[in-house]
Picture 1: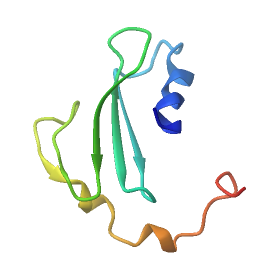
Picture 2: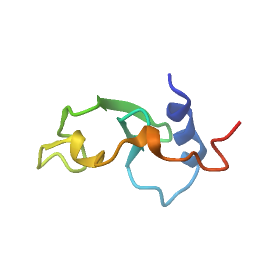
Picture 3: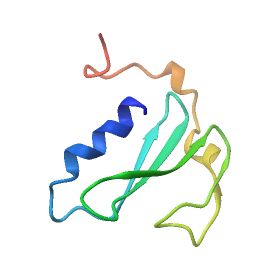
Length: 84
């Protein structure tokens, strides 16, 4: 389980949370899709780089994940939260 996969647990106790969560990581060029059928989040889909994506709640369309990476993420400076 990735570090990001642990993060949805933070939102699990909130009543007004939508049943889907998408986590995009531009540096790793990944998309993790979570669904919340009950109080726990379930990782249902992972896409990387330029794979085609068709995932809830936008599963009526398919798009290339590469469209979300229009720049070289390695050239972006890390935020203060990401610096160690």
